Image 1: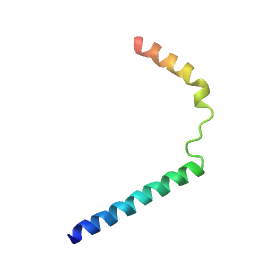
Image 2 (image 1 turned 120 degrees about the horizontal axis):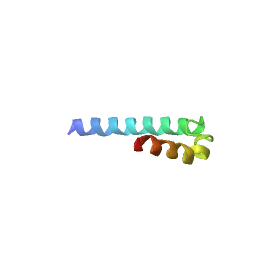
Image 3 (image 1 turned 135 degrees about the vertical axis):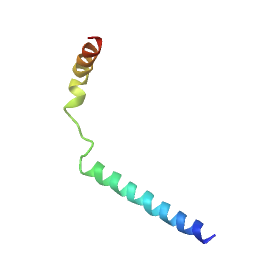
Image 4 (image 1 turned 180 degrees about the vertical axis):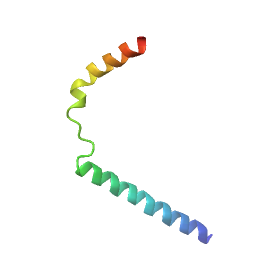
Length: 53
């Protein structure tokens, strides 16, 4: 039964670590991409042409 307490504790610590890393990434702008959405349509078209060859 003691191992269950250890595993639950470890899983909570790991979940908090992932949550902290996600919040840090959001605040530091890791997911901000202002250039790609504007040209995504053009890039998809080029990829389709290359696949047809």
